[in-house]
Length: 538
Image (cartoon, rainbow, N blue to C red):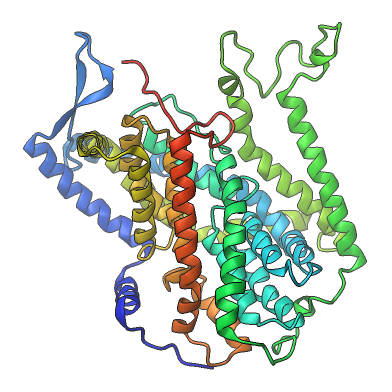
């Protein structure tokens, strides 16, 4: 095995600086201390701004004053409400609920088999885009895509006579560089929009998270990123690697690593049943969102006595407002979808034999969330401290004023935010940690510039994903290096970084171009989600 080489130049500086950073949980802990000091200074200095949406009895805007975190009332609140602050952290419930279902689907083998079936029979010419698409879709399976698809892609490429490192880089670029690109919303949407919802509260407490708020945007990202990964793999990376002269399998005893091994009858049956389960869950949600009987001509009979569970029939509501219950139900919907499909697959494939297996899979998924719970505790306290100090709103108002005075066009401002998120990603690997840091200022600031929270979240996602694949701080970067060294023993950290830089550059360029065009033309980001935003009336 090759030793990890010390990097030189800017990569070496990034690696050294990143390795010196503490764990993200402790980053939030230190930021809490910093926030306590800064808020005390701000309160002493009398920092204040007029509230952008709220007025007093005299009709004048309310004054938003900085509040010290060390004031007696603040200390009392932070200590007596500690359990509530933690459990009410917006992303926490969303993520845990979705992961209960995803844990069943992943541990039953559905995700792994589905990804394997998606790429194993692709023609040689279409192998790269098939791997890229499967990798981006594999993000619905969270960590499973890294562990299953990346080594499998290497075997598939080698079996076709292509260089396995090209398969690894293409899959890594899809899974991690295309981290936010997908044809369907998933647990990442629940996680990020939960943080967004908390950041919106100081400006618009009535705003409600819509898990599909970036659906159209991330779906288009998928079709933009797929040819980019295809081009970089076939025209840049594979040409530099040269022809592959090794075998089709690199020292593995895992039968699943053989791309030519057919799926078992149980696996095929499981995939079919999982497909049927998808249709059943979709039909159930359709029935609960649309009064199908009421659509029948010449009848006023309603299935629910005039009240559809997931559609608000209050007169005068816009369609997007009436669909709010449906959007809010999608977190539960994804959990149920993953459970139904996982059980349907597992019973046919033999990985689930009784109800105790299902419970154990759910429990295992929660055990895997242990680190996230620790991170969420410190992140929840930081966000709450930021909110009660009013520094987030004060910074947002001043930032919005500075942008207006700068004269920069709004699309350019959004693109600069994408670049900033990509730069920060080199030093802080966790997507939720970075967004918890940025959202309390970024989201309200853009809202004051009439940019929706959904667009702010989309811009962050573009920058966050593009540089994932070139930072050793990304937790799966060493694992991908190990996968590569199975085929090329002297393949070093610098080799992997150099191979991924073209992907990162082209994904960032194409992502910025997509964001610029989206903002310029004001395209809808998802059902009921627009680029523009109107502040609530004062």
